[in-house]
Length: 315
Image (cartoon, rainbow, N blue to C red; front, side):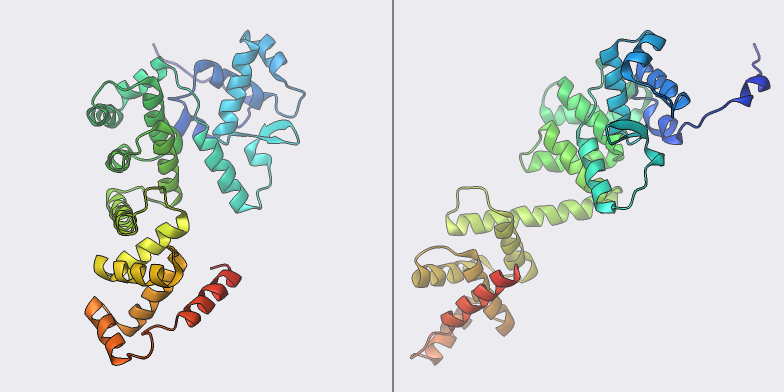
């Protein structure tokens, strides 16, 4: 049977964003598509969930869920409590847009088992991703985990092969919850980590960060989660300045002997002093002290002043 377009009906048309077909038609439910088409057709008129429910014979709650789904995808947007097509909204604050997009992406719609099954069936890469993740978990995937994988690839937009590398890395650091996987995927997309080479580079950097943190935690006897500032210090000492464990421990011991407690900024200034002098071995620090028996090799009053100035500047 052949089909022809009835040109007479083209006298009245309305726009539908390409993303609806290109990105979301596989994951959107039939009712979601119907609700969106009805909404776009009647844009500018007084349309509400109750009216759409009555016109389409769809439950009111289902209509509300569908409208929320399209808000999360950025197709619709709420302005002063009223839903409008997102293209109609003037967007001036890029940082606010990014934050809103990130929040929407993390509020992943709950895909039904049949929707997930269809996605896996129709995409060999997604099918492979699911099978490999089952190996990582060591069991069949739960619905929340399946939902997260579909979100990462179909909703957030990370390629399946890159997503697998990201998830494998998450497992390597003991963080494999669906929420963490989605959060990490969003960060990768924001930073354009969307190719295998970019993923390898990102994972290498992350591994260096975790290695530095573990070294410092072990040397300082820390058994708690580090603050972001402490993590940054650790990365700088180990990776940027290339200090050995012996040098970091020496700075720690000097700090504790002089202050009585561990202070990352204080240790940082000691190591910064040694880095500026090109010291790479504890023997160099000891030799300098022996050369100046009547004074410390470091002016700790000066170090404290530097730390104070750093805090004033907000460093």
